[in-house]
Length: 244
Image 1 (tube, rainbow, N blue to C red):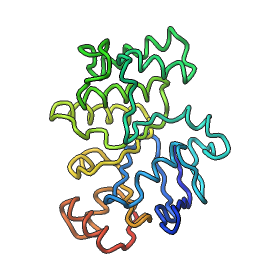
Image 2: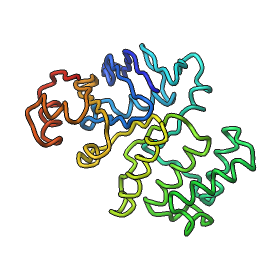
Image 3: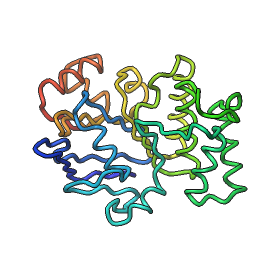
Image 4: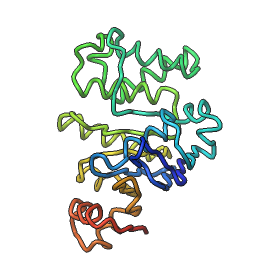
């Protein structure tokens, strides 16, 4: 479980994140939505300890990310906005490297690696150098790398961005499988159809603040819209907080 409590982050006079609070629970998919520049990426970076908040705190499985960032990182699997593969390594080598960084024993790491390669359908490129990978191949490798230590909490920043239709369908099913396994899944997306299909709860950030935190059904009901995209537009346009 990920608990975000009263996060603040400023860059000079600009308040990128202003008193953001929400909870992403185990066994649920939580969507983090907002227009460009709303503070989503800054919030995510504070969640996975790349940035330190000016105020507030992040708890991951009750561990404070500021007090014990290494322990928190072990409990997180992160697909960042920049995929950051080592281009001269193959997919298998990228995954193995992160397994060693996370302290996974070699035999266990190899077993987990092969299981991820199978479920993510990576066998046709797993031994090729990452330089020249398609967008989908980069995303799959980055996700396998993020999950090699079997974290209970998974943060995915635009996981289907650039994927073709079939790869997108498989990625969405993979996220459902993570939820079914009891994982805490937090992801950002601009695709409202995807959010409506996957999310148990949606947190909307606008102008650095949480302006909605509710189920998709509750957001549609509160805004009087039958379509989630129209509900989202109304929420970020009004700036009025919605919660349920």
